[in-house]
Image 1: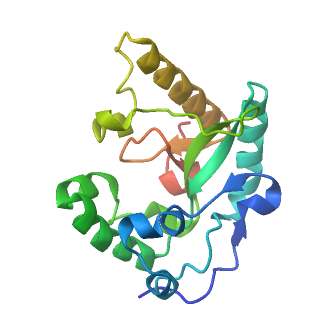
Image 2: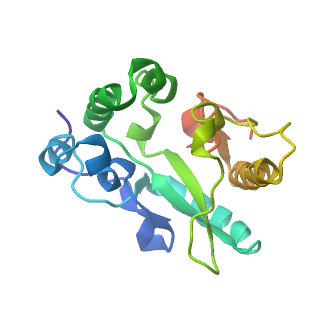
Amino acid sequence: MGKTSKPKNLVNIADFGIKGANYYWTRRERFGISDGELKSAGVFDGNAYVNRELVEPLRRANEELKKQGIELIVKDAHRTPGLYKLAQAKLYKAQGKEKTDQLLNMIRMPHSTGLAVDIGLMDIKTGQELKMRDSKDDPEAYFIDYYRNKKDLQSREFQRLQNILISTMKSAGFCIGSKGEFWHFEWKKLAGNDKV
């Protein structure tokens, strides 16, 4: 189904002082994915692997965020084409075709290059991940500016955090992915877009 070894151009982002995890590895039980299925799809551990090119831009972004008392978490990075196919099958069962197709880019498979990352934010003092959306607002809240015109304090805080994340990542040379999720960033070389 997938590759049986990690491509040589990929590195574990944690080796460079940035927290990270493989999204599907950490949610095996939630999606009903076995260790054997993951291994067959080319996933051997729970680390976030990125193309070496991303290390310095991610470090720069993280240093900027630390000035504000937060740091980034790479919540997902490299996915083999086999993992894309496995995730699609499991997500179809868990949440249906329409919602899955809205989020999972099976045509471009940007994560398969190691040049795409899904990012969260963590409060340095508490060590807790910061909420940037309310799950009751899903799936609409996955996308940029869902909270922009909302007036309640929680929505304004979600929008503020999303704005910080987006502007920091863009300043480091990343672009928003084609689906428009506030957490998904692609290195401009992958995006084929010099506008950042």
